[in-house]
Image (cartoon, rainbow, N blue to C red; front, side, top):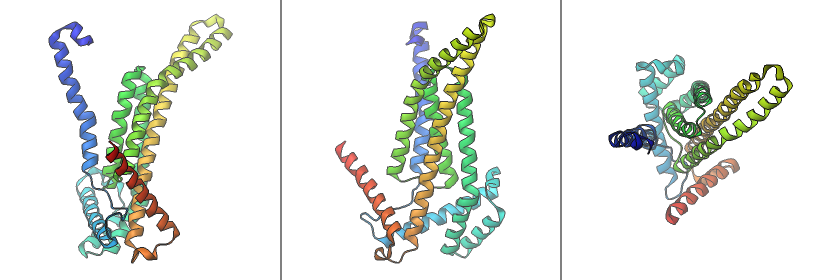
Length: 285
């Protein structure tokens, strides 16, 4: 509306630019995440044999992608050359046990530290941008964009995405974080104003000190809050990815459903319940 106040054509240009930015910043990341395959981690409507066959094929695809990344990209530094060679041998020999074992080690020793580093980098970037901007609307938009891109990067790093129900939970967290970010600046300003006033009162000889400290503290509080939101989304995404890889690994190592132990049964039942809730919500809508 402000652009239309300047000139009609400027307003239309703003609309077009907004649509382009929306597609690039929101639609593209969500589409890329959605297109990435997820492991089958529940047996609802499918046999154990079907689920195991699907997951084995997925592991092989992921293994091939990791080897390609190692051989062709700078991000090869993520992976240990020794584990990549063992993984390559498993692919060549078509040995599913070797592929599964090496992928587990790669996720534990190579990918997890890389994911932690990625989360930290995104969190620090969010801290810097939102601490400087001091605009709650822009902060909220940037929180959503940065967190969606963090999820997209983590999914690309692991080579698969969380299942639909887990992904929906992550998106809900992103939305909640954006809303909290919108209100965080007002709270930060109030806290900073109170602290700045007390400092100014105690140091009346340098009256400007209170205002300067108020600005610095307000920016810092706002940045720390948004940094925390980014870390939360990153850790939640990583936790779901690790959990689902562990669950499909359990499914692959059992002979039939009757041999499941208590922990394995609980994980599968939990996955079934969550899947059922998602289906009910879709029907309700």
